[in-house]
Image (cartoon, rainbow, N blue to C red; front, side):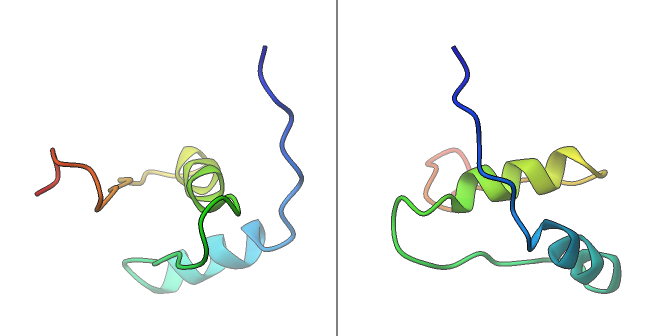
Length: 58
């Protein structure tokens, strides 16, 4: 069962920022939805999602 997500007010703003900039960094405390937000943003455009904590990126 997929858990519903809370609509993000800043998703449109982040998309606009990515139209003008090549990258966007999401920083903040653990467990606040950064990954969910990034994946939602990436799914709406031609994007590459990089998890810098993943050993496969290093």
